[in-house]
Image (cartoon, rainbow, N blue to C red; front, side, top):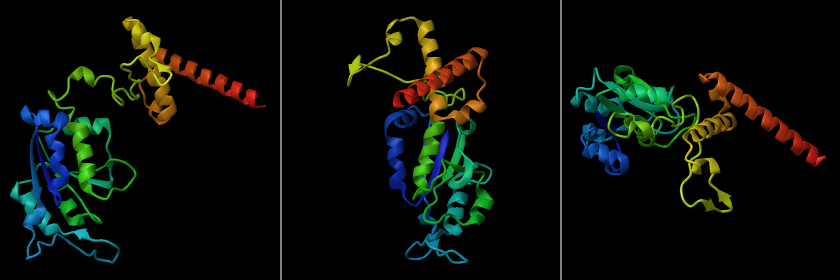
Length: 252
């Protein structure tokens, strides 16, 4: 996949491609990237890339000309162009999987009060939000989107490492443990030491259900649970109810 990023602050983006899993993907030739400072396409001595908003209001808005010229320089029209914005569609694992199928993606990093809407209307194909909050720069949210999708590309991460991750089956990932066996008075669950794959699989399934129920119960409404998983979920709910009742009685 080829990734092109348009930004006013290349120094915020470049390190991401020079470390960890992304660095290995680049070295293997799985990922090719290019970073363009669209200030280079601005006019005047000061290379001004932003201006005050029409209609008034605080902050500055990115001007359309520098960004459109930068996009035209790479023949961006017809390509999938992503703009990270709080007002976009939510980023989900399914959305990331869809983006990961592309051979080329272009990202525009917003800043200040945002980007002139005419650029969005003319070029952008995907407005994406990484959550219901606002960040100070589009560089950060753009990196989040790229991190979510590039790891799903064949050859970046072993496929078995992705199978049981959070959201792969509408459930959160089960807890993970490593050495030492005992840490801060807590021990690794004994079932993980048995070597019995069936029992370990069952424990992981149960803890995924329990964790999802407690942290993200909204996910369960659309989860394609099996009959056995539904029974286990009811058992967990019943156990929580009994625990709550015992606590109430102990406080009386």
